[in-house]
Structures are given as structure tokens and as C-alpha cells.
Image 1 (cartoon, helix red, strand yellow):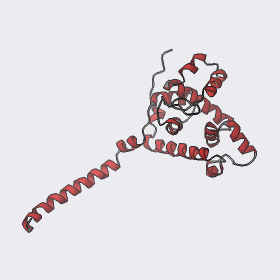
Image 2 (cartoon, one colour; image 1 turned 135 degrees about the vertical axis):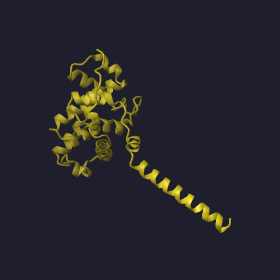
Image 3 (spheres, rainbow, N blue to C red; image 1 turned 180 degrees about the horizontal axis):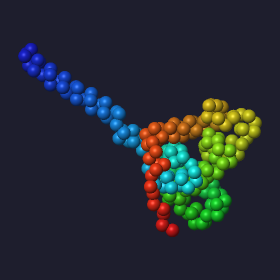
Image 4 (cartoon, rainbow, N blue to C red; image 1 turned 120 degrees about the horizontal axis):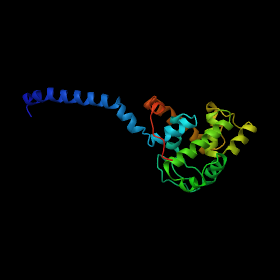
Length: 203
């Protein structure tokens, strides 16, 4: 190509590069990209159960994201079921404690039932640990008896700032990941789930 041809192509190439740069900036700053990277499924079910039991809906979404990546059919090797990976024994205990219909246990893999029982259990843990969400999340993963023992023996003081002292590596990682997604969902969705209207399920 001669010099004259290159000179003709230069403005077009510069314009194309400028357009590509503008597109990249708009794409990276777009709300769509953030929601694509950090999606929340089952928003109605999350909003309903979280509001009823006075838990931050973005905390519930974060637990679901870490537990199952929003896969309602997931079953763990240990037997945990569904979106919030609720153990059947835990579900049965929650059902008895709240005097709920026994048949809910047979529907543990239903998204709405799984979220409702998981949120009720998480609410009980938050109450048990005096409103300490970090200790409650550790208990959701490792079991409340384990966390009671760590606190009693001063192996961990229950604070997020000292989460590196949690004796179980899996639980340390779990707590940090839930907090990561909790903060991300707040940043991306703002007040959306707090204000989200929803329909009550049919009786």
C-alpha cells in the first residue's frame, strides 16, 4: 500500500478505535454488566422470606450464591438440599420449632420452601448469637455447636475482623465469600430488593 492509501485509512482507523474505546467505557460502567456478573434469581421468594423474618435480603441472596449458585436441584454429598443447602434434619427441626406443616419436608427441594426454611434457620442462628451475623454465618456452615465451642474456648471471638482465626478453613472461606457477595449485591442492586413488591403464595 502506498503512502496515499495509508493516509486515507488513518482517519477511519482512528475513528474506529475511538468508537471502540467509547463502547468499552460504557459497557464496563453499565448497570447491565454488574447485574450480569452478580445476578440474583428467585427475587420474589427471597424478598418475601427476608422481609417476614427481618433479615437483609441481600444476605439471603449471598448465602444462596455461595451455597448453591442458585441451583435448586443441587444436593451435596452430605445430603444438603437445594438453594440454601438445608440438611433434612435441620429442616425437620425448623418445621417442629415453628409448628409448620410436616409435608414441607417432602418439598425441601422446592425453591420457595427451601428459601423459607433456610431463612428461618438463619434467623434463629442470628438470634442465638445475639445479632452477630458473622458468628451466625459460621454456624450455618459449621454448625452452632462448633461455633459455641470456639467462642467458649476463646479460639475465635466471633468478629469478621478476626475471621482468620476460625478453626475450620472451609468456614473461614465461607464467611468471607458470603460477606463479599453481600456487599456486592448491595452495591449493584441498591434498595431494589427492600422495595420489591411481591405476591403472597396461594394458601
